[in-house]
Amino acid sequence: MLLQQKVLTISGKRIIQRYKYSWDANSAMTEIIYDCQHSTHAVLEGRAILGKLTTMRLEPNSSKSATAFIVIFEQLVERYNDQQTDPGAKLSLILTKTLLQASVSLVWPLQDVSNREAERIATSGTLFTYDEYLSVIKSTATIYDEKQQ
Image (cartoon, rainbow, N blue to C red; front, side):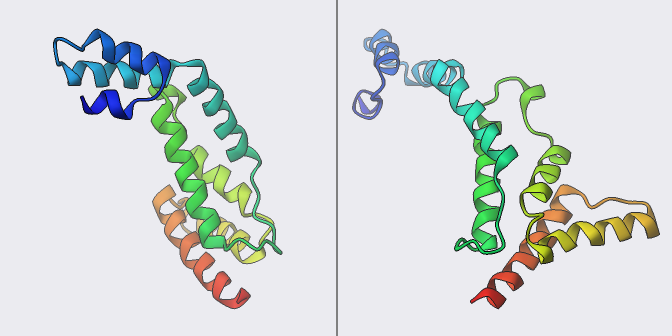
């Protein structure tokens, strides 16, 4: 009953109709999720998200805060990865880190985090993990945002 009220797509309504008499909401939801992940719309949206992730840049004179930019970036990565049914198509943490580094490279204090990573490689031979990089970049973004106000 609830699914009939909440699902608005034509294909979703058709799926719910097939389960109308069996009341098997679990199977209906499984089919709806599968349909959402494999539909033409989902494929096109995934391509659009990936395009945005590869081209988005935080400009030094942007009105958007650096912290908000990073949060939006994370949300896009999560949305993209959630849509992927093939585990090999999901963005790896290494690639995600590289994309994030490129997207903030125009803002010197944020680019400096990558420079610190280069120094770390020279001294200890280890890269930041994605989580380490994300933690440092968020802290740096917060400080940067406070100075911009």
